[in-house]
Length: 351
Image (cartoon, rainbow, N blue to C red; front, side):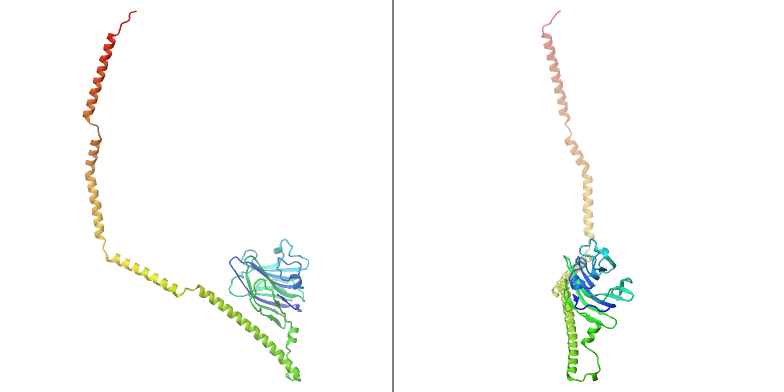
């Protein structure tokens, strides 16, 4: 969004309030411009997509991975930002500022006077330079750009103040990326042209009285219209927040179910405590001890007999061994006698 008229003052203060919100890894950027031909040179571009421009660009984005920041860029119309290989290096001033999901509007103040240019964020100085003097006859503007996971930017206030008066424009609705609207800058001369303060005696004709009354009623009507829109927007935001809070609260059924479960758990614990305190388990422990002792004594008493029986039943019999030895001796003796006989009956050979 851009002003329709140029700024005729060389010293001014821009009071800008916005709020940014979105998912955890959202992105996007918001630019505040002061250029010679804003609609033609910049249009809806960002610092990264604009070509050559003559003036100032103030960008709010997540550059650097430090939670957000504010940076200032200058150009005299000779540098093509779109084709530049390292736009970040062209910044003349910056400060860190975590602006996302704060739940409140953020305020940025851009001021130029005889001492130089200063940028403040939430009443704290961001950066300042006494070597910058921007010319008059430039346009003010605001643009935004989104990423794959876009943030939502809401513009609450855009005021350009001069030494004697200020111009103010309230946004008519929530501005979501990309915001395209027109902001009218009212200078001291244009403000005085709308409604001139004059003495009542100087208005003599009925036409002049009617014209003066008409202008003042029209100004009041516009002011009431702006106030009504602001109240409507505030009411919508309050209703949305109330609905969000109600959706996160537990219903009566959930609370009742939790109370019933807690009561059941409490009853079970109470009953278990009563059982433990009312019953005496000494007799049970004594019976277990007696049973273990009896079993141990029986095992020790029967173990020697059992081992002896196993050894005696598994050992070889003595009679069997003796008979086996006698039979083997008889077999050997018979074999020897047979050998002797055959040898004696065999023919003898003499040499």
